[in-house]
Length: 117
Image 1: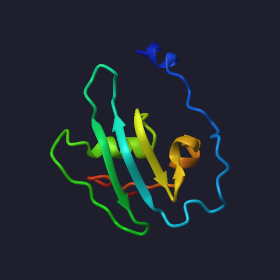
Image 2: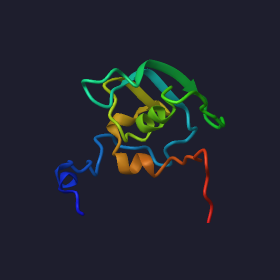
Image 3: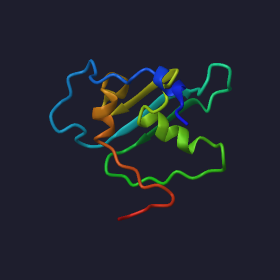
Image 4: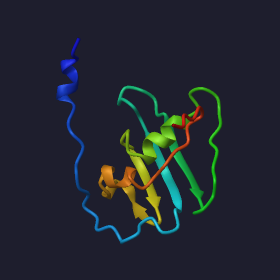
């Protein structure tokens, strides 16, 4: 059974508006500045005015109860869900100005239940 509703989903942009320095990200510094994310306008925010900094080279584990926003942080960082307020910077570049394809090619995540081939 084919779901025709998926045909109406707009395709993501293929290029960003920002010229990316060669070798970006250099340090891997991640900064969330007052980030708010809603999955739908009618729903309460999944992330509300969230700010934190992760220095480059740091290993981070995100823990919390169900619904605390762990997946929402990754969704925002990978631009799987658009933020509706604030900025996310990686090495001082606003990721909203970088193509999502290029951005995602520069990150890796180890999920809670990793599967290795």
